[in-house]
Image 1 (cartoon, helix red, strand yellow):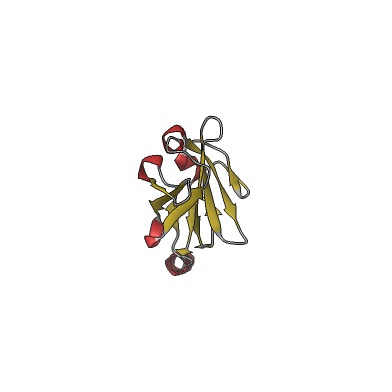
Image 2 (cartoon, helix red, strand yellow; image 1 turned 60 degrees about the vertical axis):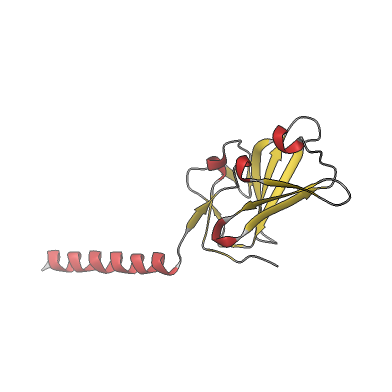
Length: 142
């Protein structure tokens, strides 16, 4: 009888946990790889940057002082999560003033992915996967 009750409780627990996860799916994402970033000249100087993101969203950014060679010179250096806008901001830096910053919002239920280098809302690691993050949904802003 005790074995039957224990088995029933175990099955009930697994069922409830399964429903909790099914109701709140988790998706893992990273900042875009540099070769996925498109560089476009802006009217008046500088460049804008765009890359496909998760859930049909787009990572976007611009640098009004960028020169054409910035994109080639930069590498991924880290990411930041900004809770007030629910945005993940990705940084790519190079020598001198070379720099690109891309952002995508609004990530719901953001959290650092397990086993990554996030320290609170900041990740300082040049390996994209070490700055991976989890979220439940993405609500792109207009």
